[in-house]
Image 1 (cartoon, helix red, strand yellow):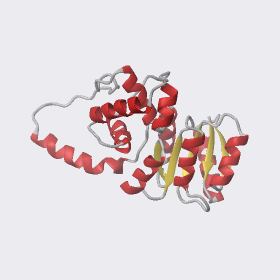
Image 2 (cartoon, helix red, strand yellow):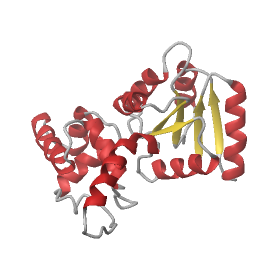
Image 3 (cartoon, helix red, strand yellow):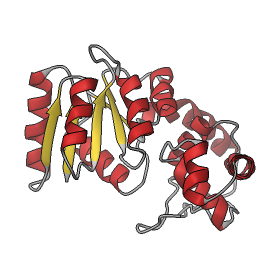
Image 4 (cartoon, one colour):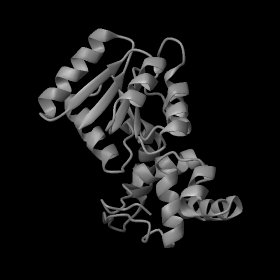
Length: 227
């Protein structure tokens, strides 16, 4: 695994690099202290598989950097890293195009699991994002006599067509409607129709809410899926 870690604190970068080396023997960690140097590294280094982006950076912010990466390198997954985990910060990172959000207080096992999940086309979000929903769900569960069963959730189980599934797959990657249309050979209006169907299936109204819902459901695509 080749990873780019972007943070303006050298001590934090070195600590995470050592931690990753102990977790994954074959990991190669590149380091950058700003958005600008990160862009230079990405342009000069082939094979970067994932980016860990601190949100508090000098110059261009981490959110700006994520948006820039989504525009220039739409296939490259970016995970936001922050000392904050309030819902507003998480939503801002998702709006910018992040495919995951890791707090700096996370354990090494959480970091490893999050990276593996994102690399396998999943989305990792901190449990705190779902806390309010979980509390509401627990109240409903107490009043219900029906046993609950966990099952794997796929686009098919949500009732999505193959084309709608392909659109959802790209929405979860943070790709813009224009890029989705270009990749799938669809007009802007057709992408909009499929996106509306996807949002209805997930019972949400925005793309960001769709990302959160998919993460909460544990939605999975086949490992080799490319839409």
